[in-house]
Length: 171
Image 1: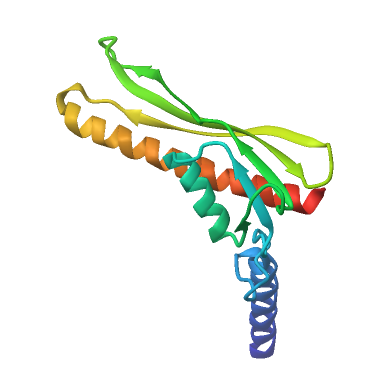
Image 2: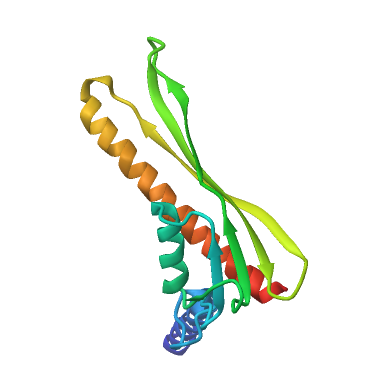
């Protein structure tokens, strides 16, 4: 009886170890220099949105991923940015029909072109977030809205960098 219980415990641990190792294979651990979303010294020229907060944000995210910013003549990929579109819409009402929530959305259109080809990929990335609105705390609400907008711009810039990585790998 004791041997059978020990055997069952061992089998349970073996299965548990096997299942956990199968689930943990893509948890984000990578050897240095093997980041699957790194650009590894890819030369990227960014046109448009010069001297804007969003343009600077996109450029810094690209550099953080390993891209080298260069001019259009020496770049491997040309990224053309358009000004992001930011919107706010009512997304909820209270029982008294007063506004209780807003949905903020930021969308950025862009095009990607590989040096030496005529093929251009035109796409956009967007993110949105809902803010619960309280008319009694208007100043705090405005600060929260500004924070949401800033976070959305950062997330859109991050998603745009991921699109550049995908473009680099697939074409």
